[in-house]
Amino acid sequence: MQWTLVIPLKPLAQAKSRLADTASEGLRPGLALAFAQDTVGAALASPAVRDVVVVTDDALAGRELAALGARIVPDAPRAGLNAALAHAAGAARAVDPRCALAAVNADLPALRPHELARVLDAAAEFPRAFLADAAGIGTTVLTAVPGRELLPAFGVDSRARHRASGARELGLTGVASVRQDVDTGEDLRAALALGVGPRTAAAAARLLTAGQ
Ligand SMILES: Nc1nc2c(ncn2[C@@H]2O[C@H](COP(=O)(O)OP(=O)(O)OP(=O)(O)O)[C@@H](O)[C@H]2O)c(=O)[nH]1
Ligand SMILES: C=C(OP(=O)(O)O)C(=O)O
Image (cartoon, rainbow, N blue to C red; front, side, top):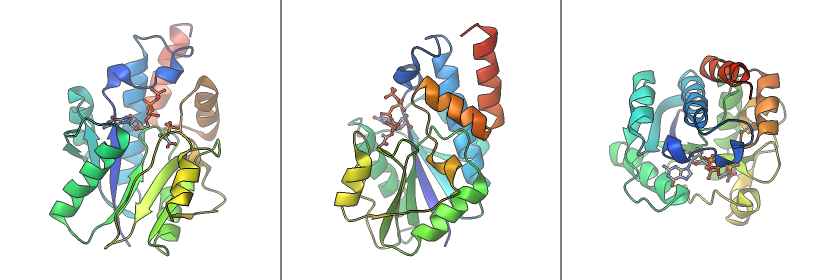
């Protein structure tokens, strides 16, 4: 099965507020963009991914991610993450009503294309499925096969909420790069240890140069 990914991204100036102690306000937007670029780049290189829709109102991120090959959809509802994802899912199904959908966070800078393919291949066995994040509290991937709605419940305790919604939790091992979202300085160190994509590597080097 080939998947359409929907990836949400806040305006960069507001993104990654929990990295405030790791990156200054001047460097944080560039870091958030680098995470998104490496996430989208790896996703588009995955054999299980047909296309990527990014839902964002950020003009710069929209241009940069479109240049990588993503379709950009404005965050028309402006009502938070789950409304943005439902809107992007609708935009994808308006083009192809039978597409398989996967919501993926924009902060997976260590993402490896073949690990994402393993997750999506496993998800194809269930109407809706999800992968918990490295911290074991959140979610990095939520899927819905053709004919099923995504019903996203990202945010606080989303692992428990996706489980309660009837989505099947994927208990895969060996997919650390798909679980490693980056919200804190500690997460960034963990992602760097796994090996990040080229834009995040460059942005992290700028942090070091700036003495942060
Ligand atoms: N389009 C869109 N994306 C969102 C919205 N809220 C969050 N996101 C994205 O959803 C993912 C998870 O978001 P959050 O954890 O809430 O925000 P964050 O920027 O990653 O981190 P914090 O500012 O530290 O909370 C990230 O890819 C965000 O950019 C929204 O209202 N609209
Ligand atoms: C929104 C989520 O991600 P984050 O860890 O970025 O808050 C989530 O896990 O549901």
